[in-house]
Each structure stands twice: as structure tokens, then as C-alpha cells.
Image (tube, rainbow, N blue to C red; front, side, top):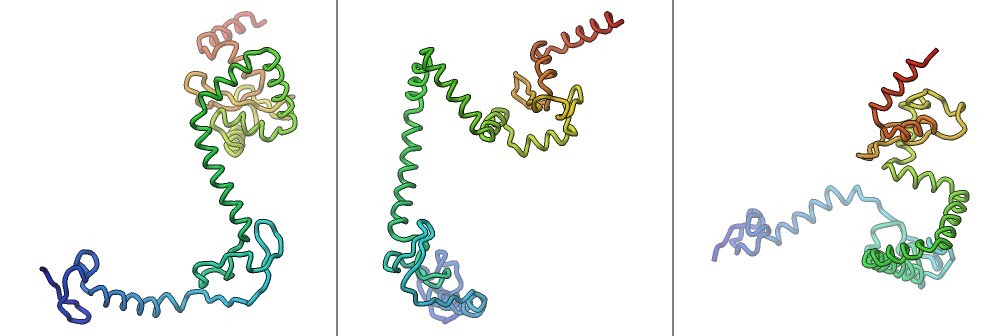
Length: 234
């Protein structure tokens, strides 16, 4: 069996007594001793030292209640962190674990039953009365939560609120076609996008966006409309 001489202790040892399949110059015993000494010389002096106070009670970070330390679990490594005990009491820690497990189970369930739930929704909305109820609820929700409604609409175009503001700033805060500012319009600028590719082109006022939509984004029709106006312009 192959052997190797340790560069530290000088003893002839088997390759299995060395780390990295015998490639290390020091044997395992010498390597561990060397690592401990290097740690004590370099890392240990710079580590933050904690002093723990003997306390009988502690405030739970989750529920905010003052409880006996017997209601808390001790940290495994008491040398790390400002407290010997964990930040959440045992009951709160158990509750948080249950919530996390429940959330994971719910995500798996939603993924498995996605098609089934979509079909149920389709059948439900196929009834005119249910469709009207759903629309009324959506309108009421939009009134109560305008901020969330705006986020949802922008997300349809792959935009965030920050992205919308950057795009508006690049247009100097006006419509990209007619140049109207927000103060001259009754409503906000809307997102204009290519209906084939879905790519956002810019922000337009309602009138300009509607005009492009009525002409089906057809450049030939737009040119003919311009020629028509020039011909009949007094």
C-alpha cells in the first residue's frame, strides 16, 4: 500500500491519513493542528466578543410578549449572536414552521389543480348573472385599491412603476405623438404596445392611442389619412 512522508511531523504514513486523497503535504493530524493555530493567530483576535447577561425573561420578536427564558430555545452556537436564546419563543417558532409547511403544500396543490380550477371558473362565468357579479366585484376592488390596479395593468406590459416613470421621463412627461402634457389631459398617459410582438412602444394620450387602434397600426392607412387631410385642407 502506498505511503507518504508528512512534511510537518516527518512520519511515514498511509495516503488515507492525508487529506485530498493523499495530495496534501501534511497528514490529517498535523493539518488540523496547523489550521487551529492559524485560526487562533489570525481570525480569533478579530472576532467580535459577546458578553451574555443572565436574564430570566425575554421578549419574543414575533408575538412581542415578555416570556420566561424557559419558553425559548437556546442557540446551538452560543458564541454567535447577541443572545444565548433564539429570537422567537417556542410556540411562535412552531407556528411559523407550520405556516411555511402549509404554504409549500398550498403551492403544490395549486399547481396540480390549475386546469381544474380554470375550468370551474369558466363554467361559473358562463352564467350571465355570475359574470355580472364578477365584473361588479372587480370594479369595486379597483376603486378601493387603485395602486394595486395600476401595478396589475403595468405588469400586463412587463412594466413596473419605476419603468413607467423612466419611460415618461424619457418623453419629457408628454404624449409621444401630440406632445400634450398631463395637465392638458383628463386622464393619464396610457401604454402603447405592438399587438403582434407585445413590445412597448411608448406612452400616448387616450386620443392618440385610440387613433392608432382604429387604423389598426397600419402605416399605409396613416399615410393615406395624412394625404387625405392635406388634399382637403383649405
